[in-house]
Amino acid sequence: MALKDKKLNSKDCPYCVGKGYFQLLLGGSETCMSCEGSGQKR
Image (cartoon, rainbow, N blue to C red):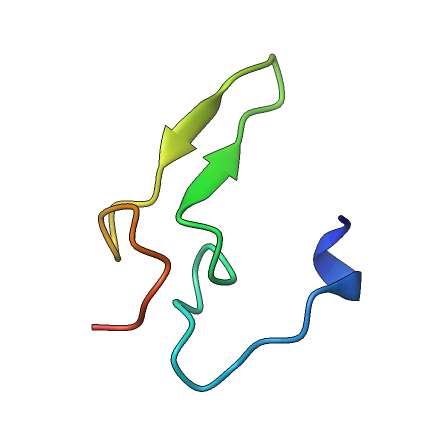
């Protein structure tokens, strides 16, 4: 799912768009430091 296709809910973390992780360019993923992987806004 592309970032532009995802609708941001009011409870979603604004940095990872509610996914809880970031997709890295060279492969793999990294946990979002803002929400600590939960995908929820603090």
